[in-house]
Image 1 (cartoon, helix red, strand yellow):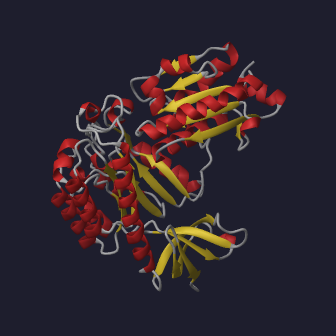
Image 2 (cartoon, rainbow, N blue to C red):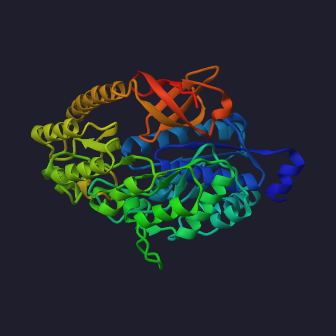
Image 3 (cartoon, helix red, strand yellow):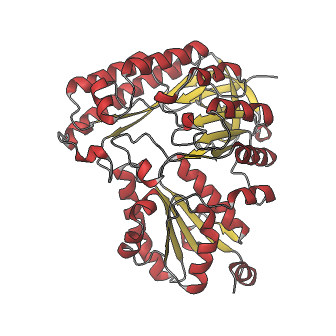
Length: 453
């Protein structure tokens, strides 16, 4: 019996999804929901009701990988209670460990590599009908997603939707596992990207977030000659999407043409996520980041010259092997000079295959922890000061839905600079751009009042 006929005879089958890690994983999870939705699976938020559990994983940092092992361990009791439950693991941990996962977790049924998402339906069918346990780690991206888009057989996730434009990375930063689990850079053809954005727009999406490990290097390997800046212009001119964002950028590939795009394309949000990782040139060199702190500062000056109200977020790492107290102080000084709107901060951890795992002079955990706390405290001060400076300003906000902090009529949305704003208003404003005067500021959000048209 096929999955679809089983669903028809016994009621809908239920899919429970759990994503650990980055926005790229969230995008892949949404693709799985679309693909399996076509095959008769209804999404559930009750894990005890699930016929299939899909776990999408991240191994960029040791803590994320540890979460995967812990989560899989907890699923053992569910499988024991319901032997027909199918458990799938996908993403970077799946790519990294492959068949070892099946050996360690006897209740696991299917391991999918980072390029295998389009095959999830067919492989699930094999597991369900033949009681097979499978590992699928294809070397190249599999086809099937574009066909689903053309048929319109998917539902948009909301007002804002991610769209992957490239995968993989060629930079080989010495601390990073991404090239080993996501592979080398592979850009998606522009026509396919435009098709997806047009389909999302028809479904009511108002903003797209273009995703890639290094979106600035988009275009490499394509038969057409197309830079990332040219792709942005194409999306801007050839679709009706209301807002465009992108992440993540590498400083070494941030061109003057791309900086100019922020001033030239009105629907491109004035916000960029530009990881700097360290303020020390010595550590940046050991990380193989291929730029200096001075070069990074000059890029920020260029961005702010093009758009004075540019929103800036970044990634930073503390405790890289050999990081001295002076190196750490240089990182704090760069933060004080730039004053990021948001900062994702982490302490270094060894990752398999990454060159830094072989470096000497590893720092004690207590030193890394103390530095991370000091850095985060500084950033909290900066963010609160910058948020308070917004009080009295009138900002254009894309309304994304009801605020999670409210039980009634409070709406939430984001400014172009990616700041969260909560305000009172009617539900019919969801999906619209509105003007809000900022009246109060907090650590992670702003509060305001809706302006009259």
